[in-house]
Length: 101
Image (tube, rainbow, N blue to C red; front, side):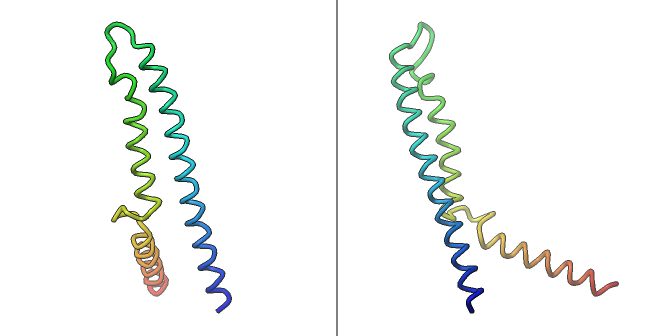
């Protein structure tokens, strides 16, 4: 039973590290984009639009959303259940191949 507890602990620790990494990503996103937006809006040249100040935040924000979805297991595909099913599928496939030989 001790091994099972250790496995659960390691999984929980890994999850906490993923959450921490997401929050660090979020803080960096906010700080960098505040700086860039303020700097860009104060230096808009002729022919530029306000969109130019928000491009980085928009595209980086898309990546941040996917990072958050993955971190909090909100993506239905490629989540923990998918990993477990895939591991079982591959193990079963390998076991069946071993039986043939």
